Image (cartoon, rainbow, N blue to C red; front, top):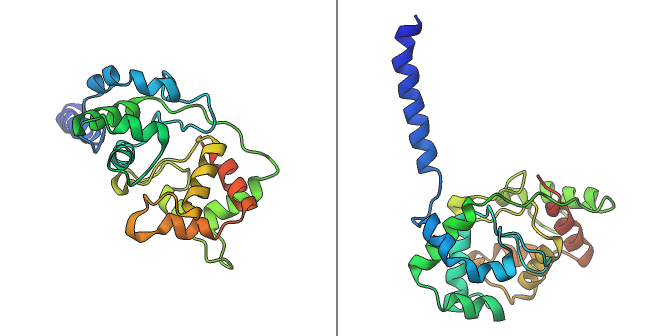
Length: 209
């Protein structure tokens, strides 16, 4: 019986290995090339892709389609930041793809803890939204553990600095960040959040594992 199963198990192993390889990244880039090009990035995002400044994002482990989309937005001016815009404008399409898959390949930072006083409200908003305000649940796009959706270019949020997340929600609410495109989904949601809601959600996702 074992001899008969061996070829089947071997084939299954090859199939799984193939699927794993295909699932490595949805972006066609080179991790090795990205590593060589990432020196400038590490000045703000850290040598491991995890920033020591809470206003600068952790990008290690972030899905490559999202990172690539943001680099392209900084380059073409649809997303603006004094530091990132000046860096992205120098990058080619190949550079951006290589950097995206490189940072995707790095292990994400160990999650920080959430503020215990904000967990209940943060979890309620993240998982259930706010029906009275018409606010959708964050997990609908970002997943129950905040790991995002690479195919849809929705970012991973888990373990992200609370201060950075809050800054982005405020930018969406103010309309100064428009990378949600024609759907306006993030601008619509963020505009319905008050300051306490933003603080609670940002703290909660920082503690997600």
